[in-house]
Image (cartoon, rainbow, N blue to C red; front, side, top):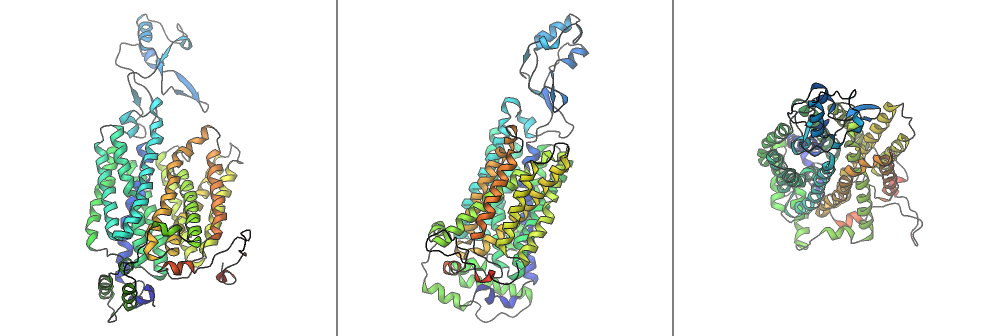
Length: 549
């Protein structure tokens, strides 16, 4: 039986049809880049102190009514307390001067009962200043990020199975519509609870859109173009959107204006429904051979080539032989070989997501200007994605991913050895770790898509991505562990990366092989077996015994 790639080889790899699919799908991914990290600006904590109502105080007492405290060697206004206003008003009316006639340390303090006053040096308004998420309510900031990533987690799980059942294209556009519409609805939030609910629903479509576009392109495109799309195409589109975020935020410093600017242009993507086709591979897996052939014939017309009379004869025979064949997520755990592959990919995805989002959410430490910090973090991803594409193009998957995970772990472990008087070296090591984990990210999606057969591909990618999104959920809390031990977040992320690097060696190799169409083809792939397992020799796959690294 001829495989899909052989059946559509007459189309070529880079005709007008493939170019249109490539760039249109990449365009749908751009909103994911700025959508994934909008919270960096929406929930950033501006300088603030207790508001002082318009009362009759002298200039000296207006300056002194907010206590001062030392933070990192610098004196700052207390963000959560002030001297009792009734006492201060009485002392001011008596003409007493603070610091000369009155010892300020003897005065009683109170909480910010009249609200807060926020600095507008960096932002005009954020979600923090809109709903007063400071002091005793500051925990809500971390909770907001976690709720968003829980939405991403559930969306990744559900969308993968929906895509395998109803098609790649409907799920792609459904998740895109969720992302655009609920980003827009957030502008009209009347409380932080309403904002939280809308943000959760927005998260359902956030990365689900990315995964659907990735799988759709990986199944339509073939050969080196598929590798280019799965690694550099999709990821550079994400990085481009990521770099647009600080640019938009710099000029739109009000959180509502920023959300409007990020949501309204999304309407331009809706007409793409009539330009982006369904996956012929998925149609064939469902027995819809005529629809698959129709799409390929239109592609042939675009590319100005002559298609054969019957494009998929073997698929028609195969579908008729077993028309009721059904697969579910349980197939990912049904046999030992597929079970090991799934569990290892889940672990690697979890470690990569934890490291990637943990380092991305830590960008405020890189530079005093949050816009510069965010841009640096985004710009590092460009060479990382190019490196990932080159690795997928010329190197074996298993060793490449193992190396990048070890590089990430090494950089994170070394940060704790850097003296405090060399902050730039710490920043360099942190960006090296961000580079390494981003390379891993760019390779993992393509690697997962290459390992699983068509009927399970989107479910498998969705479930592995879902487990990875658990790392997203804990990343906001992981970053806050530095209040207990300064380098504890780096130690945790480095340990996860090292464990994932070790486990990835037991995955099958997919370099230079066609996408598997059936579970049987997936099981035939060789893997390194652990010698400590009874009855199982340590066996090196044939393809690793010679040839390039």
